[in-house]
Image (cartoon, rainbow, N blue to C red; front, side, top):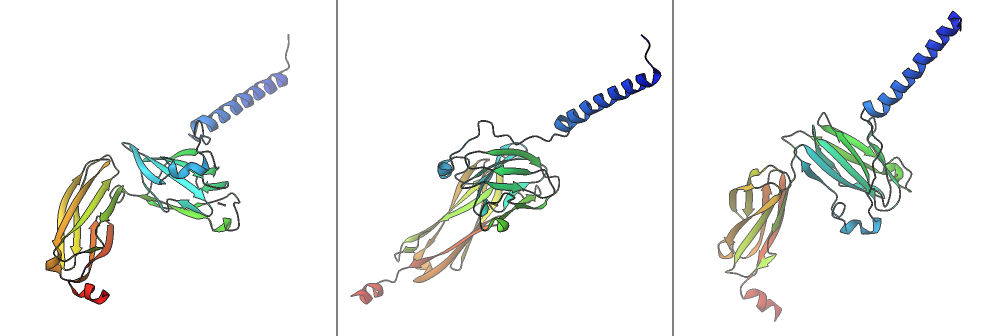
Length: 263
Ligand code: CUA
């Protein structure tokens, strides 16, 4: 069979185009690492978010050596947590759901873009190459203050980022002669042990104690002071560790005078 030269050219040309299309589409869907939002087996009832171990306390958690998970709840008209602090140069997987209506989860200028649908969990992984602040907006109409619904993702450098938390237990008032105990609980949410210093002040006394908190655990540090030394009245206290500080005050009751006033 004889094929005309021009016809051969057209045949070859269309073959090249067809192969070109297939290569382009394959590269676009696999090669660029862009994936569709994954919600396989990921469901959570919006009414049970408070009891859910992932979303009860929206937070960032370490899940691998350089891997973190961020559990984010969208609701009219905020994102929780706010801000969302994540480490730069680590893989962060966002798990996003909604407590009420459909919201959007979009970081302008990036492909971090999902719908937050009540009942479903959207998942997407990203790595922030540079520390910095990234605005987060809701881009699905969700009600009267939709245009104000925004959040913030803060990608922090390795030195800056931590999953440390401080809580303090202290009495509101003590009787004269009693010992005052300030108990600081230092939580370390990261895998690496945390070596740090707890500073405390009570009245005009100051305390300092070094503490090492193993990965994913917490340590208590207790400071004591005698109410007789401090004297009657209200005394401010503060406890700090790293960038965290808790403050309060304790009242040392008057001796007989208080009872006398009441009668
Ligand atoms: Cu939430 Cu729009």
